[in-house]
Amino acid sequence: MKNQFDLSNEQLIDIANSLTKKVVTGLQEDGTEIKCLPTYIHPKKDGIKGQATVFDLGGTNFRVATVSVGSKSEVTGSTERDITEMKNKGFTREDLFNAQAKTLSQVEIPKDSPIGYCFSYPAKSLTDGDAELIHWTKGVGIDQMEGKPVGKPLLKYLNENTSSRFTGIRVVNDTITSLFAGLLNPGFDAYIGLIVGTGTNMATFFPSEYIPKIRAMKDWSGDTPVNLESGNFFPPHLTAIDDQVDASSNNKGFQRFEKAISGMYLGRVFMEAFPNDKFDEGFSAVNLTRMINNPGDSKPEYVEVAYQIYERSAKLVAASIAGLVKNLKAADPATKKVQVLAEGSLFWSKIKTGKASYAEMVDKYVNQLVKDLSMPDVTVKIARMENANLIGAAMAVLS
Image (cartoon, rainbow, N blue to C red; front, side):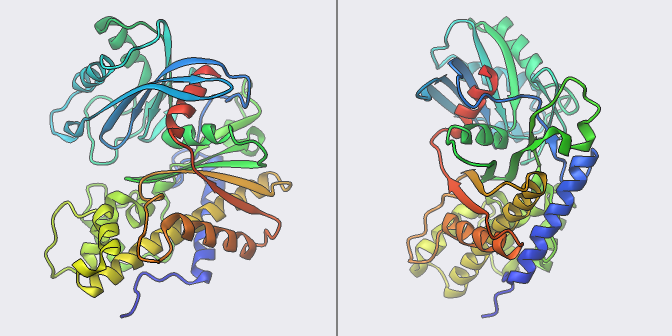
């Protein structure tokens, strides 16, 4: 059976080079395909001490935790709730704040605590540590929030409507929190935060002078954390099936990379590969890995195509990392050791059938590709950390 999702080494190099070019464009101007959104927070690499309340709004799960950062960083209390109703028509900003306040009441909050808010939607970082929602993704469309600050109105609501008192709020993207948490592993020349779960994205640090679009900011210097919003990357070598998935989505023309690789869309890619067969409407990457792990339960061609889609996703991620490493090497030619702190259920999914798992494939392909891209002295290490986004969000507000 022909693998229509196969990508040759030459094609992966093409994809990596395409991302490199588009990152350069994103660092030069706003509103480009890969947005390269600067975050105006300098995370301390050491000497951070204190306690913070952390909010984490992912796809449809909202988590509240208390995190202490010091010689040992740990989550001291945590609760979460599903707020899938965020996707319902007519769900308001007030409804969201109310749901968040209710979740908050289930955790013992330190007195006069700051909030680190890990917010997993495209948002533009503001110089006061807040962020402005650019647009909703992942099927959410709450009115009157786009183009406005995320943190301050929530802080005001909580201080007026709950028994807790909060001293301030900093809003950071989930890839930025992974990037910050990665700093707790010293000894690398460059750091990347990566998410491959429901959606996908990358973040890294660039020297401020390497980012033309922020050069006019007189009060800002040093390394700038940059949220790429790389899910919107439109790579070469996608298929007619990917075009079909895009055409039937609610955000046609956007998030093309995400639609080819992330948990929310891989099930749709699979269903488009078998247009005449009937599958459950909610078929997702979870069903895909279940199929791969239990090959006796499905038709052999289903199992084969499921793994082809899974493998292509890992290869595309490896190519995007390699492309970003090329940007980092251009910004600082001394870069040799790069850490990628990876988060997300798809990235760390387990494969039981003797085939390579997602993380193993990314590791193998990215280290091959950096050599093929004329960076023989570079090694990329994939790392994992428990509660990385909670710890990174606490670091953001305590720095």
